[in-house]
Image (tube, rainbow, N blue to C red; front, side):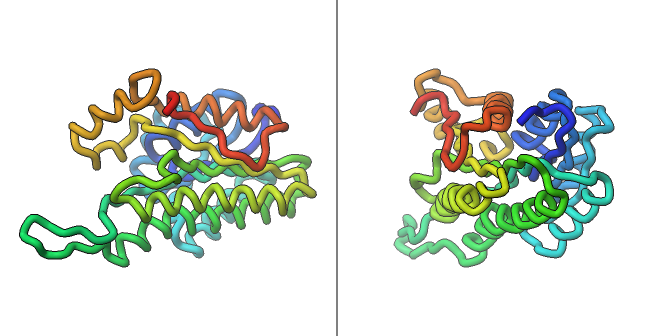
Length: 250
């Protein structure tokens, strides 16, 4: 799929990887519907891209009505959709059960589990359902769904909610690829390693120091590294139903 003239929806476009994705797609000649719950962040993305081909829409991806309304707004602006990049995600660090120094027991709250799953996994489902409906209604010749997963999908200490959500994104993309191949719509997962985004603010300086030396290139990745891979996956129509890593070699 060529980028020029195509229309993509990108979730989490108000910061980090999503902002870079939106900018890279617009630079390649695409038009982008940028979705994010952070209206100020979307405004900053729009200011940075400085191009009418970026169309910001405020959206809470965990809320079904918000997603439905956001895609309806996009449909009013554009007559067709060629791709969706499910990038919106949050993290919450908490052990399942932990014995504290005073011997009391700390447990991950149901709210902490549900909040992460609702944004990371439910949000991707809701957005993909709207995107594919739009693609089929407009009879696109080709389409693509990309889920931004994570190396953490294999399991990361104190992140059973986040790891489960990122593993779920891979499973959903594989199922979508099977279901939608007949419509020439691909589905692919991309699994970044440690990337320089706001999420790193949740980690200690000691942990970040370890992350810097945790791969073969001895550095933390940049959002541009992820965007470059996303563009490659979009343009290479022989990549489908798989996970592509971008982690510096772990």
